[in-house]
Length: 154
View 1 (spheres, rainbow, N blue to C red):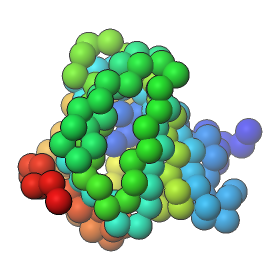
View 2: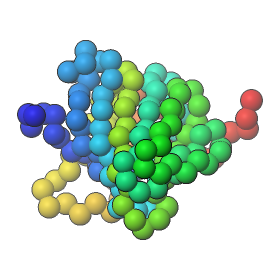
View 3: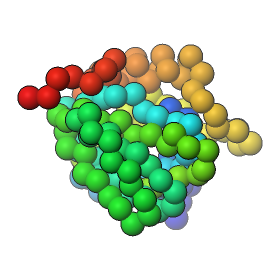
View 4: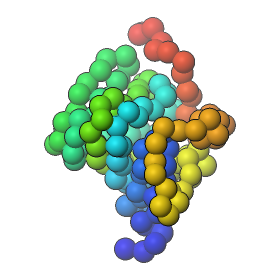
């Protein structure tokens, strides 16, 4: 694998290692191995232009889809369809590792702008205010709407 494929990013306190880039798939998808040390959660959000698939390798991840929480343990997966509000959380103190596939590869572009590249020796913790502002600023450019709370179900 090249350095390009192994680049790691940080978003919302989660380290995301790019395994397959959108460039490699002509934009069809991107593939990441994500790890959270604990006490992480994404904002409640909706993707307009891409879907996500999550597969848990290690630990327990909570996926909230349209306001309903589902606990995912190793070997479990969930499809997060565009247009449906969702949130991913590791509320515990134990590590979680999971695969994230973005289809098409819009998420990869958002991650490069809304997150930051993992720095050598960086200890990843809760996002700093500047990290949150960068995420908020980038989201609309990639069809991602951040929500304050769960919308009423249709």
